[in-house]
Image 1 (cartoon, helix red, strand yellow):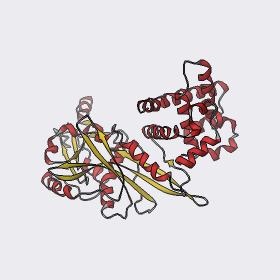
Image 2 (cartoon, rainbow, N blue to C red):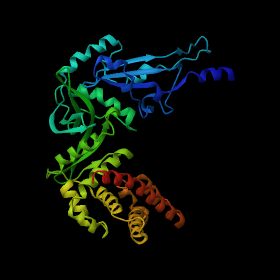
Image 3 (cartoon, helix red, strand yellow):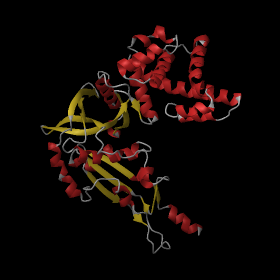
Length: 406
């Protein structure tokens, strides 16, 4: 039995390692492994264990044309388990698990996929161009990028979105497809604009979705839902450009109350903190000489009216900027900062359990759970210290980026 088990172990693989993505601009890219990238996660397709059984040296190729994201799927392996040789044990049927998440029309024939390259010359972004910018990789190469705003009624966009959306399953935890029939969704798309053989071409960089919520009595509160920059374009500042472009559009509109974010990941929260802190430090109420006075109603009001930042996020930005303005080696000043932050973290403890329900939508889950439990004084103090240290560690990452741009 153990011998059979050992043999079966050879036919297990990590689905994150097996899956290979490429954004293909020309036929030569099909053989260019330097442009390959892998998923961060795959449990939303292949199960919680992120494991595929029944193959040795499995490779699942998912290649997409760089602009329109037309898809080619292929499975390669050195060996596949045989039910006859392994007491009726079958290999996982990989293709259906993947294709049920994809729109129809994907290619399994490489020659048919290659024909898509010629069509890429005609591919153009959807919607309205709202921002252009450049990224300088070195002193010679300058890359051009554009951000467009669109909705699902734009001709051809629904199909394009159906090819783009599956990527969220591999890069955003707990991701789910949105209802594109709901007109309250807006889409912000990032493309690289480049030349190939004299032709103007576009490559898809990433996107953001926002949902328009009504805020009584006559305002609206847009909520950022999904944000994804595809891996070949990450760490180049595109997320920052995308978020700032969205802010620039919202902050001039009187009907917008403020902006919220749906369940932000740690990476997106850090991006949001950076953009918001960079914007808030230009406001009069967030100047360094005012930060040590504590978080004020003026800060909350100015952040909301001028930048559409909600009060909870404004408080977070205040803590970041005050930490940046505080000498951590000055014991007295840093103690005042620590007490101020802990006072905010401790607020749930000051409310009775009967009042907890109204905090469900504004407190982090760990804060709410701590407030609901009957902790001892020592446990509460340990909790406050742990939360404070984690906050400072996250804030320092934002401050480092702010310092680089100063």
